[in-house]
Image (cartoon, helix red, strand yellow):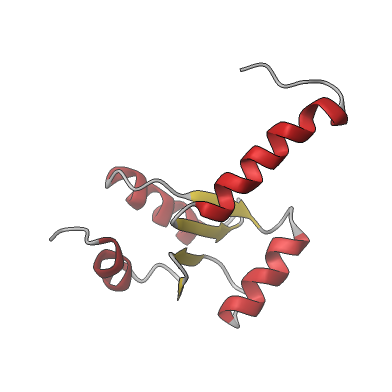
Length: 101
């Protein structure tokens, strides 16, 4: 897909992506340098779980939301249909996503 060059032309794409992120069941708040974030994303991908990756190092609004929702400043933070998990807590993630059952 070709990305439009002007901000005005990109607006519908940005709105579509934001809508997708808001309604995605699994959201991962992460940073590019976080090893646990990479491990978590690899684990979900291996188990065919779709997720929205939110890079809080580039999005201050999402960082503020993550801190408000989780009470944590560290990543990863996982939001599974409104259930907040701090860190890569495999047991909780498996239970909520019914992995291995």
